[in-house]
Image: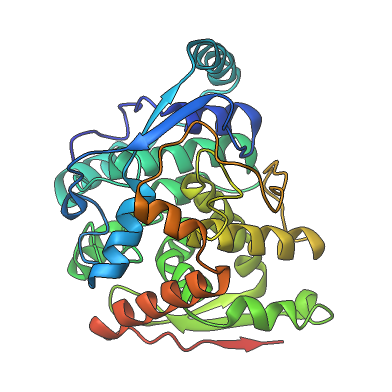
Length: 328
């Protein structure tokens, strides 16, 4: 781990803009995007992804060099500094910082910057826009695994980690990788969408922990809180610009579906401003490789299916059971 939680990362302008506004936006008029040459997917959290097509798709989506207009960058910097001065981030237990530094490996790169940069963005966003509950969950949300079978620590270190957290934080941290996979790889969200009258009577949900397949039972109250953490997490995977062209991006698809479900059913507690993109708009200020143009034509349903298949394969490979049970 190259940084500790005591060292505040320098956010990308997209992340700064999200923290300033409390939401996501299409920045097509403010940025210029081009492919990154000689991008090495094996240095990212997607290094475990198999198959030429899935690897090509994800590389095309994340291997982007984003340049911001000078005036837009200066404005975002100024607003971010004002925002940061409004409310200091809460201190983190030094023992937990030491555990993250000495016992975990966060060196792998993320879609934008380091893995730790992503964790810290989620932590800071939650601090400002989901103050009802602990932001620490989002600093640690992937410590027990990602969606691509990368693990910052082995399961044998769980007894060291758990005492460093509150019971609430632990419940949500251990569940996070599992709920993420359920959202991407199963029909969970569809089942919930079809039961609007029962949602408020959800007593519990049962599923399995990613890192070791241990059973988890989460209360209905905690589950709705967990979905708020999940949608905050998704804000860090949204295309920076040209949303209509990238509407079939798997994370963007899930964000839109989850946002619609949670707002329509009164479950969105976190502040996330969002305006749906138009069905079509010409690509602006972005160089798309051939694969990129082809991806703009891919049906949304196909993108969802490919992602679900990938998640199922990742879980099968480590013996993780994707079955779940809802109790109303």
